[in-house]
Length: 261
Length: 261
DNA sequence: AAAGAGCGTACCGCTGAGTGGAACGCAACC
DNA sequence: GGTTGCGTTCCACTCAGCGGTACGCTCTTT
Image 1 (tube, protein in one colour):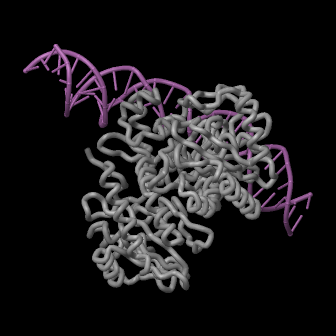
Image 2 (cartoon, chains in turn brown, purple, green, red):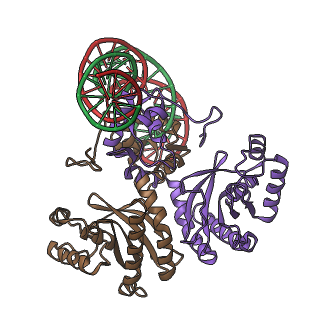
C-alpha cells in the first residue's frame, strides 16, 4: 500500500553489522573517480577490520561484483550490467535517447538527462562530441541542486516543501558565482517555473554555462526529469538554446505520458 | 599476482548458502525485461524459502538496491548509480561517446558499443534517433556472439582458443538466417580479420542488418571493444557504412592507446 | 644489512546474526 | 464458504560470519 522510495529522515543506512552492510560499504567505498583500490585503502575508507574486508571482498569477487587486479580491487562489469537493469532509469534513458540525440545534433554541445534524488541531481545520460566542454558531470554521478541548471529546474518543479528544505539547508559555495543566498535562489526558482527554463552561469564549475528545461510528469506540475545543454564561456550562448531544450523536454514529457509514464 | 577476471569452468556462482548469495540471487532474478516483481515471483525464481526472500529483500530495500512499490519490488536507482561506477565500462563509455556521436550523425542509424564477456556480447552503449530500427539490444544487455555483427567481430579478434570454444559449443538458431554451421562461421571470422568488419544479415532478429568493426587494444591483435551500426532491411545498406564504422573504431582504438589503455 | 613500515594472506575458536518451517490475516476467485 | 495465493510475523536453533592475531612479502629508511 505505502510506497516509500526513499528513507524518511535519519539519512542513508550505515549498517556495518550485517554482511550486506559490509559488502555495500565496500562497494560504495569506490568514489566516482576511483578505478582500482588496494585492500588497505578499502580498509581505511570502510573502517572495517582488515580480515573482514579481505574476506568480504573475496566473496564479492566470487559473485562478479568486484574484479581482482594486480593492484587491488575494481568494480566489475557484473555490477554495470546489474545497474543497467534498474527499471525506472533505464526506461527513461531509452525513451529519452532520440530526443537527446536531436538536441545534440541541433546544438553540438554536451547534453544531459537528469532526475532528482533526494536533494541532488543524478545524471542518467550525458552525451557530447569531441569539442565538448569539460564538465564534472558523469553518467550515474551526482551534483547539488542549487548550483546546476538541471538541479534548479528540477527543484523548481518539486513542490513547496522541497524548496524550503533546500533553501534552508546549507548552500555550498562551489565557485565565486555560486548562488548561496536563499532569497536570490528562490527568485530564480520562481522564474524557472514561469519561463520553463533555468540557467547556470559558472555556478558549479568556472567556465561553464548551462540551460535546462523540465520534463513534466503527466500531472503537469512535478518534474519527472530534466534535460540540459552545457557549453563553455565564450562561444556558448545559453539563451539561444532555451527553445530547443524546452522543446526536447516537452516532447519527451508527452512521450512519457503516452507510454504508461 | 594472478589476475582472474572470470571464473574458470563450473559456470557462474550459484551460492544459495551465504547472505550475499541470496541477495544476488534476488537481484539477478530480475531479467532485462522485468520492471517490478512481486515477492511470490521472486520466491519462484530464486527457489529460496519465502520468509528468507521477504527478509533479504527488505534488507536490500533498506540498502537502496531495491525499491518497494505497491505491486512488488523493483531494482532501484541506487543500483544504477553503483553500476555506473564500474571503472572499465565507464571509462570506455566516456572516451567512446564522441566517436559514437559522430558515427550516428553520419549514418542516422542505431549505433552500438559492445565488449566481449565470456561467450557473449555486452552492450555498453546504444544510441539512436526516432527512426531507429527496433533492435532487441539494450544497454547493459547481452547477446550471443555468433549471431551479431558485434559478436562476430569481437570473437574474430579474440584468439584461437576462443574461436574453437564458441565454434564447438552450441550455436543457437535465432532466426532462419542464423549461421549455425561452424565451418561457415569460421569462414566469416577469417574474413572479418582480413577486412576489419563483420556483418549480420537478419541472424539475430528478422528485418535487421548490421556492420561492426573492432576497437583494437594497444597490442593490435585482440579487440578491446567493437562498434556497430544497425538498420532495417530496405533502406539500410550495411556495406555503405563499413568505412565509417571502421574509421570510428580505429580512431577510438588510437584514443584508448594514448590514454593509459 | 638490519630495522621498520605497509601490504596481502592465513588461521581458528566463539557467538549472535541469519535462518526457514510454521502459522496467520487478507483479498480475490470459484 | 471453501479454496487458492498472496504478504507478513514469530521464534528457537545453529552454523556462517566474525575479527583478533600472526605470518610472509616487498619496499624504504637508517
